Image (cartoon, rainbow, N blue to C red):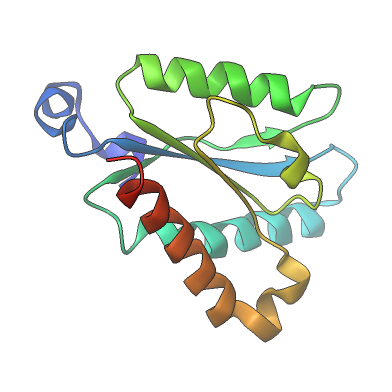
Length: 143
């Protein structure tokens, strides 16, 4: 479920069920031409659907962090994850297609998934299964 699909009035009723925030990180630097930006956004969308579609009743996708230039991403994700938890989310999942994303794991981020899009075309089913297992493991070992 996308953040903009939830009205302020519905949030109070849905909050107990929508306990997981999905925070996408594109990893753009501003040096990409329009075609590369489009490709990055399409790849991120494909990876996000692996969580958004099967877990629609439990996960809320927040707006993506697109640009990462001149930012300490670990600190940024720590602060954003903490704020999201204070808003009422029990779990925060960060999903990125940036090759450097594995280095960004912050304490308040419950799960950081760095998708290797170079392998996506040849191994997408295995990658999707791995993502699903990681999400389920997060919930079953922390509920």
